[in-house]
Length: 234
Image 1: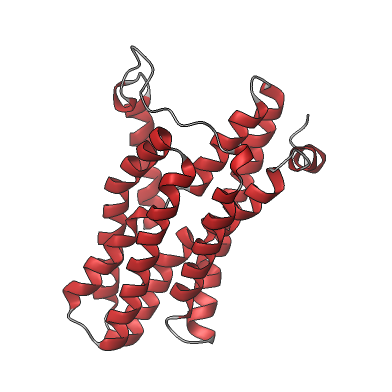
Image 2: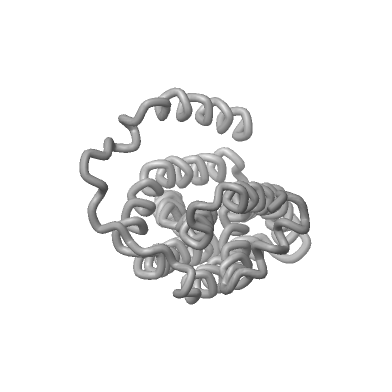
């Protein structure tokens, strides 16, 4: 199977693939929307881009710490069982941020509320796990699925911030965050509702398997992506 449009369409014809792909697409967009929306919303309310940047930077740092633990829980207990409460907590954090901004709450509440959005589940990683379970040991189709997922990630990476900026400036400052909340709730619900394609949980790691950070090649890979993240962040 090729990695062009025809190859992608062949993948989406597999039972359940279109449904979890659509859910994953909706759930991925907010990851690119929340930070831009928060910056524009806080700056419009408090008149300070420094405060807005500090709040979002704190939230991103919290995400870097929390995301691996969320992913580990997903692996151990299953996507539906973990992703839904994790997304619900993130939704509460985003709504709390909107409330704190609207009510003129102290600045520290903005940091606490936005940090709660760190539990947003990684829909892209969960979708790739589903493709792996669905396609089994078929390297050609797994390669096509990986290419497709990369394309979806790039679309969300570009469209999410742009959509957030348009909503916050054309409608009202809270519009981007509220839209992101709706997309996350609907997307995760739809995604996790596809039980037939959900990979089985792994309650215990494989015997003799090394921790991810101790595996050969992981440290330099992290260093490269840290540098890449700094470039994008700048």
